[in-house]
Amino acid sequence: MDKAIRGIIELIFKMITSFSSDSKLTLSFTDYAPNVYKFVESIMTTVTLPVGYSILGLFFLLEMQRIAYKVEQMGGSQFGFQTTGMTLVKLVLCKIAMDSISLILKAISEVSIFLVGEIAKVEFASAVGQNTVSIDKLMEPISKSGFFEQLVLFIIMLLVLILTIISTVIAHVLLLARMIELYVLFAFSPIPIATMPNQEHSSIAKNFLKLFASGCIHGTVIYLVMLMYPLFIAQGLLNASQLDVWNTIGTVAGFSFLLIFALMKTQQLSKAIVGAM
Image 1 (tube, rainbow, N blue to C red):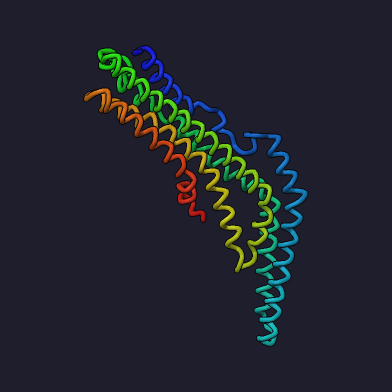
Image 2: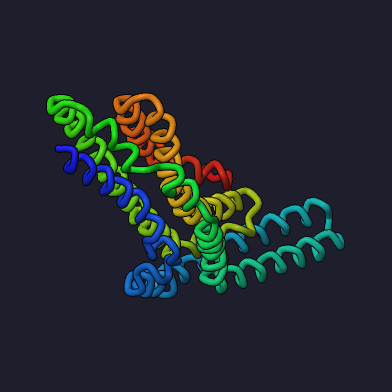
Protein backbone atom coordinates (compact mmCIF):
# COMPACT_ATOMS: atom_id res chain seq x y z
CA MET A 1 0.00 0.00 0.00
CA ASP A 2 2.83 2.39 0.84
CA LYS A 3 4.29 1.87 -2.64
CA ALA A 4 0.97 2.91 -4.17
CA ILE A 5 0.90 6.03 -1.98
CA ARG A 6 4.47 6.85 -2.98
CA GLY A 7 3.55 6.44 -6.66
CA ILE A 8 0.64 8.90 -6.28
CA ILE A 9 2.87 11.46 -4.54
CA GLU A 10 5.51 11.17 -7.26
CA LEU A 11 2.84 11.51 -9.95
CA ILE A 12 1.43 14.66 -8.31
CA PHE A 13 4.84 16.30 -8.22
CA LYS A 14 5.52 15.27 -11.80
CA MET A 15 2.24 16.81 -12.98
CA ILE A 16 2.63 20.10 -11.13
CA THR A 17 6.20 20.60 -12.31
CA SER A 18 5.68 19.56 -15.95
CA PHE A 19 3.30 22.43 -16.71
CA SER A 20 6.19 24.91 -16.88
CA SER A 21 7.83 22.86 -19.66
CA ASP A 22 4.78 23.14 -21.93
CA SER A 23 6.16 24.80 -25.08
CA LYS A 24 2.73 26.18 -26.04
CA LEU A 25 2.96 28.66 -23.17
CA THR A 26 5.73 30.52 -25.00
CA LEU A 27 3.87 30.68 -28.32
CA SER A 28 2.19 33.84 -29.56
CA PHE A 29 -1.32 33.72 -31.00
CA THR A 30 0.23 33.77 -34.47
CA ASP A 31 2.19 30.55 -33.82
CA TYR A 32 -0.21 28.73 -31.48
CA ALA A 33 -2.52 27.67 -34.33
CA PRO A 34 -1.13 28.97 -37.65
CA ASN A 35 -4.13 27.81 -39.69
CA VAL A 36 -6.55 29.55 -37.35
CA TYR A 37 -4.44 32.70 -37.45
CA LYS A 38 -4.45 32.73 -41.25
CA PHE A 39 -8.21 32.27 -41.21
CA VAL A 40 -8.90 35.17 -38.81
CA GLU A 41 -6.34 37.32 -40.61
CA SER A 42 -8.23 36.73 -43.85
CA ILE A 43 -11.49 37.69 -42.13
CA MET A 44 -9.88 40.85 -40.81
CA THR A 45 -8.49 41.99 -44.17
CA THR A 46 -11.49 41.07 -46.31
CA VAL A 47 -14.46 41.62 -43.98
CA THR A 48 -13.88 43.74 -40.90
CA LEU A 49 -11.22 46.09 -42.30
CA PRO A 50 -13.54 47.49 -45.02
CA VAL A 51 -16.23 47.90 -42.37
CA GLY A 52 -13.70 49.72 -40.22
CA TYR A 53 -12.87 52.08 -43.09
CA SER A 54 -16.59 52.79 -43.51
CA ILE A 55 -16.95 53.59 -39.82
CA LEU A 56 -13.86 55.79 -39.99
CA GLY A 57 -15.31 57.67 -42.95
CA LEU A 58 -18.62 58.11 -41.14
CA PHE A 59 -16.92 59.57 -38.08
CA PHE A 60 -14.87 61.86 -40.33
CA LEU A 61 -18.03 63.21 -41.96
CA LEU A 62 -19.67 63.74 -38.57
CA GLU A 63 -16.57 65.55 -37.33
CA MET A 64 -16.48 67.79 -40.42
CA GLN A 65 -20.18 68.54 -39.92
CA ARG A 66 -19.49 69.53 -36.33
CA ILE A 67 -16.62 71.79 -37.40
CA ALA A 68 -18.74 73.42 -40.10
CA TYR A 69 -21.51 74.10 -37.59
CA LYS A 70 -19.08 75.75 -35.16
CA VAL A 71 -17.46 77.83 -37.90
CA GLU A 72 -20.88 78.98 -39.07
CA GLN A 73 -21.78 80.04 -35.54
CA MET A 74 -18.54 81.99 -35.21
CA GLY A 75 -19.08 83.71 -38.54
CA GLY A 76 -16.04 82.13 -40.17
CA SER A 77 -12.51 82.32 -38.76
CA GLN A 78 -9.10 80.71 -38.78
CA PHE A 79 -10.48 78.32 -36.17
CA GLY A 80 -12.07 76.32 -38.98
CA PHE A 81 -8.74 75.79 -40.77
CA GLN A 82 -6.95 74.74 -37.58
CA THR A 83 -9.68 72.36 -36.49
CA THR A 84 -9.98 70.86 -39.96
CA GLY A 85 -6.22 70.35 -40.10
CA MET A 86 -6.22 68.61 -36.71
CA THR A 87 -9.10 66.41 -37.81
CA LEU A 88 -7.26 65.40 -40.97
CA VAL A 89 -4.17 64.56 -38.93
CA LYS A 90 -6.24 62.35 -36.61
CA LEU A 91 -7.82 60.69 -39.63
CA VAL A 92 -4.43 59.93 -41.17
CA LEU A 93 -3.05 58.58 -37.89
CA CYS A 94 -6.10 56.38 -37.42
CA LYS A 95 -5.79 55.11 -40.99
CA ILE A 96 -2.15 54.20 -40.32
CA ALA A 97 -3.16 52.46 -37.08
CA MET A 98 -5.83 50.44 -38.89
CA ASP A 99 -3.42 49.43 -41.63
CA SER A 100 -0.84 48.44 -39.00
CA ILE A 101 -3.24 46.89 -36.48
CA SER A 102 -1.81 43.43 -37.11
CA LEU A 103 1.69 44.62 -36.16
CA ILE A 104 0.36 46.52 -33.13
CA LEU A 105 -1.48 43.50 -31.74
CA LYS A 106 1.49 41.23 -32.42
CA ALA A 107 3.72 43.65 -30.51
CA ILE A 108 1.33 43.57 -27.54
CA SER A 109 1.34 39.78 -27.68
CA GLU A 110 5.16 39.70 -27.73
CA VAL A 111 5.21 41.49 -24.37
CA SER A 112 3.42 38.52 -22.79
CA ILE A 113 5.75 36.06 -24.54
CA PHE A 114 8.74 38.02 -23.22
CA LEU A 115 7.38 37.94 -19.67
CA VAL A 116 6.78 34.18 -19.81
CA GLY A 117 10.29 33.62 -21.18
CA GLU A 118 11.90 35.74 -18.46
CA ILE A 119 9.84 34.09 -15.71
CA ALA A 120 10.88 30.68 -17.05
CA LYS A 121 14.53 31.66 -16.61
CA VAL A 122 14.07 32.27 -12.89
CA GLU A 123 15.60 29.36 -11.04
CA PHE A 124 13.08 27.87 -8.65
CA ALA A 125 14.34 24.28 -8.65
CA SER A 126 16.10 24.86 -5.32
CA ALA A 127 12.74 25.61 -3.74
CA VAL A 128 11.25 22.29 -4.82
CA GLY A 129 14.42 20.25 -4.85
CA GLN A 130 15.49 17.38 -2.66
CA ASN A 131 16.82 19.71 0.02
CA THR A 132 13.34 21.06 0.60
CA VAL A 133 11.08 18.09 -0.05
CA SER A 134 12.20 14.50 0.28
CA ILE A 135 9.65 11.92 -0.71
CA ASP A 136 11.66 9.29 1.19
CA LYS A 137 11.46 11.41 4.34
CA LEU A 138 7.76 11.96 3.77
CA MET A 139 7.19 8.22 3.35
CA GLU A 140 8.88 7.28 6.65
CA PRO A 141 5.86 7.94 8.90
CA ILE A 142 3.53 6.52 6.23
CA SER A 143 5.38 3.21 6.06
CA LYS A 144 5.13 2.90 9.84
CA SER A 145 1.36 3.38 9.81
CA GLY A 146 -1.11 0.54 9.96
CA PHE A 147 -2.97 -0.87 7.00
CA PHE A 148 -6.21 0.96 7.78
CA GLU A 149 -4.40 4.31 8.13
CA GLN A 150 -2.56 3.70 4.86
CA LEU A 151 -5.84 2.84 3.15
CA VAL A 152 -7.44 6.10 4.30
CA LEU A 153 -4.28 7.95 3.31
CA PHE A 154 -4.34 6.33 -0.12
CA ILE A 155 -7.94 7.46 -0.67
CA ILE A 156 -7.12 11.02 0.40
CA MET A 157 -4.03 11.16 -1.82
CA LEU A 158 -6.12 9.82 -4.69
CA LEU A 159 -8.50 12.74 -4.14
CA VAL A 160 -5.55 15.14 -4.15
CA LEU A 161 -4.34 13.58 -7.41
CA ILE A 162 -7.80 14.06 -8.95
CA LEU A 163 -7.81 17.72 -7.84
CA THR A 164 -4.37 18.19 -9.36
CA ILE A 165 -5.54 16.66 -12.64
CA ILE A 166 -8.62 18.90 -12.61
CA SER A 167 -6.52 22.01 -11.97
CA THR A 168 -4.14 21.11 -14.80
CA VAL A 169 -7.07 20.55 -17.16
CA ILE A 170 -8.60 23.88 -16.09
CA ALA A 171 -5.30 25.63 -16.78
CA HIS A 172 -5.11 24.19 -20.31
CA VAL A 173 -8.79 24.98 -20.96
CA LEU A 174 -8.24 28.58 -19.82
CA LEU A 175 -5.22 28.87 -22.11
CA LEU A 176 -7.24 27.56 -25.05
CA ALA A 177 -10.15 29.89 -24.25
CA ARG A 178 -7.66 32.75 -24.03
CA MET A 179 -6.34 31.95 -27.50
CA ILE A 180 -9.85 31.78 -28.93
CA GLU A 181 -10.59 35.17 -27.38
CA LEU A 182 -7.43 36.65 -28.90
CA TYR A 183 -8.30 35.28 -32.35
CA VAL A 184 -11.81 36.75 -32.19
CA LEU A 185 -10.49 40.12 -31.00
CA PHE A 186 -7.88 40.08 -33.75
CA ALA A 187 -10.49 39.37 -36.42
CA PHE A 188 -12.70 42.31 -35.33
CA SER A 189 -9.86 44.68 -34.40
CA PRO A 190 -10.34 47.24 -37.24
CA ILE A 191 -13.90 48.08 -36.13
CA PRO A 192 -13.10 49.39 -32.61
CA ILE A 193 -9.87 51.02 -33.80
CA ALA A 194 -11.92 53.03 -36.32
CA THR A 195 -13.56 54.90 -33.42
CA MET A 196 -10.29 56.53 -32.32
CA PRO A 197 -10.78 59.92 -34.10
CA ASN A 198 -14.17 60.49 -32.49
CA GLN A 199 -13.89 62.10 -29.08
CA GLU A 200 -17.14 60.62 -27.77
CA HIS A 201 -16.46 57.03 -28.87
CA SER A 202 -12.65 56.84 -28.70
CA SER A 203 -12.97 54.94 -25.40
CA ILE A 204 -14.13 51.93 -27.45
CA ALA A 205 -10.70 51.68 -29.10
CA LYS A 206 -8.90 52.20 -25.79
CA ASN A 207 -10.96 49.53 -24.05
CA PHE A 208 -10.38 47.16 -26.96
CA LEU A 209 -6.60 47.52 -26.70
CA LYS A 210 -6.81 47.02 -22.93
CA LEU A 211 -8.96 43.91 -23.41
CA PHE A 212 -6.52 42.46 -25.93
CA ALA A 213 -3.59 43.22 -23.61
CA SER A 214 -5.40 41.53 -20.72
CA GLY A 215 -5.95 38.46 -22.90
CA CYS A 216 -2.21 38.32 -23.60
CA ILE A 217 -1.27 38.89 -19.95
CA HIS A 218 -3.78 36.22 -18.94
CA GLY A 219 -1.45 33.52 -20.19
CA THR A 220 1.41 34.96 -18.13
CA VAL A 221 -0.75 35.07 -14.99
CA ILE A 222 -1.81 31.41 -15.47
CA TYR A 223 1.82 30.45 -16.01
CA LEU A 224 2.91 32.25 -12.83
CA VAL A 225 0.12 30.69 -10.75
CA MET A 226 1.04 27.20 -11.95
CA LEU A 227 4.70 27.84 -11.15
CA MET A 228 3.90 29.03 -7.63
CA TYR A 229 1.75 25.97 -6.92
CA PRO A 230 4.64 23.48 -6.45
CA LEU A 231 6.43 26.06 -4.29
CA PHE A 232 3.43 26.28 -1.95
CA ILE A 233 3.10 22.50 -1.95
CA ALA A 234 6.80 22.09 -1.19
CA GLN A 235 6.68 24.52 1.72
CA GLY A 236 3.52 22.93 3.04
CA LEU A 237 5.05 19.45 2.89
CA LEU A 238 8.19 20.70 4.59
CA ASN A 239 6.28 22.25 7.48
CA ALA A 240 3.73 19.44 7.77
CA SER A 241 6.28 16.61 7.57
CA GLN A 242 7.79 17.95 10.75
CA LEU A 243 4.47 17.32 12.51
CA ASP A 244 2.53 14.35 11.16
CA VAL A 245 1.38 12.85 7.91
CA TRP A 246 -2.25 13.95 8.30
CA ASN A 247 -1.24 17.60 8.46
CA THR A 248 0.81 16.96 5.36
CA ILE A 249 -2.17 15.56 3.46
CA GLY A 250 -4.43 18.36 4.68
CA THR A 251 -1.92 20.94 3.47
CA VAL A 252 -1.60 19.35 0.02
CA ALA A 253 -5.38 19.01 -0.37
CA GLY A 254 -5.91 22.62 0.75
CA PHE A 255 -3.43 23.95 -1.78
CA SER A 256 -5.04 21.83 -4.49
CA PHE A 257 -8.41 23.50 -3.84
CA LEU A 258 -6.64 26.87 -3.66
CA LEU A 259 -5.04 26.31 -7.07
CA ILE A 260 -8.42 25.71 -8.72
CA PHE A 261 -9.80 28.88 -7.12
CA ALA A 262 -6.72 30.88 -8.16
CA LEU A 263 -6.95 29.67 -11.75
CA MET A 264 -10.57 30.79 -11.95
CA LYS A 265 -9.50 34.26 -10.78
CA THR A 266 -6.64 34.68 -13.28
CA GLN A 267 -8.76 36.39 -15.93
CA GLN A 268 -9.99 38.95 -13.41
CA LEU A 269 -6.41 39.54 -12.26
CA SER A 270 -5.15 40.04 -15.82
CA LYS A 271 -7.87 42.61 -16.50
CA ALA A 272 -7.00 44.41 -13.27
CA ILE A 273 -3.32 44.57 -14.28
CA VAL A 274 -4.03 46.49 -17.50
CA GLY A 275 -7.14 48.29 -16.24
CA ALA A 276 -9.50 46.59 -18.69
CA MET A 277 -13.26 46.66 -18.03
